[in-house]
Length: 153
Image (tube, rainbow, N blue to C red; front, side, top):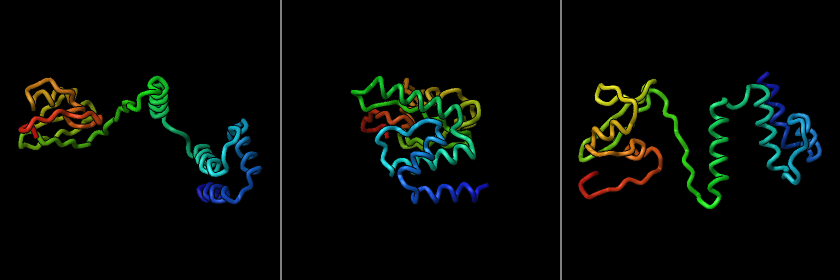
């Protein structure tokens, strides 16, 4: 099966535009978008062939992509879109703060810092700094800029 799929994909660049359009209709059960360039059809068709053979995106990823698309539509004038990253268990997060390196380990149920379990990064950031911080901002996970005073880092 793998060899057959690889062969189908390898043949795509050699197909005529008409053959690609016909294959598009067959795989997508509808006509290709009007005016789509041949150079775009080839990777889209390759993806569709693989998707049919191996399965598509997980529902959670589809949901996240829909949310991102909605956010982009809402904020057409603003280039900023928040993308939530889901960290996998076992991931280690490091942050240098006032001359000390702090390590947090992502667990199945939250986070571990110095042998103690926490539900949120914000709890850990507060413990480290003594102030109310957004955990993702403190650990620089969300692209948020953190305010630096001369002695903090």
